[in-house]
Image (tube, rainbow, N blue to C red; front, side, top):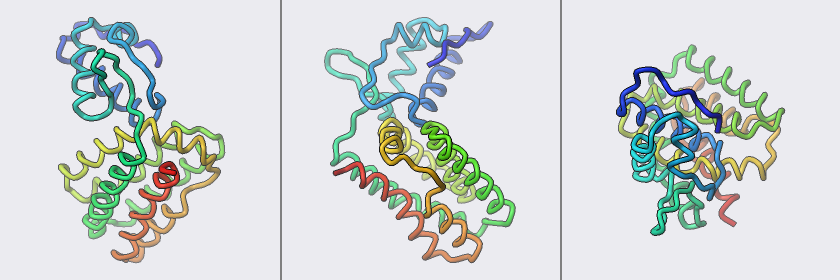
Length: 217
């Protein structure tokens, strides 16, 4: 993680929120690997904050499932068992097709064009073997679609699952060595264009479960 300069006149509350949000994004995008250890002192030094904002940010991330806290006080990113991977894949398969279905009535041409542009960015990341960029743009594709569902509680639950999966997704993409846009992303766009709800649900369910099932072997 890059060292960030402390913000002038930053309150303790805003400092902890900045650390929380930045760390959350880094974990979700796979910038840290499964089982990678962190210390409150190291987090404080990285973000230019005292121990209190660092501790509060870690507390929130542990509650979200983005970090694990052992009985000895060791903080690390989670290492997911096959059973946990299957559980998280099942949650995605339940919620995300529903979000896409709710977004379908508002899937106008501007949204479809935006998703096509994001797919082009995903292809660029794949060609460069940029795993973190691939995860970031892949999640951007899904979030852009799901925002049209106007279901903030469901989206918040989905993002918590993404957070827990982030480091493991990084390991997965490194192993798969993808070189192009996921086939299911093209099917998702085609279903949106055709107004095909069953096809959209199927493409979403396949997209969010296939890769995770490859890990659980």
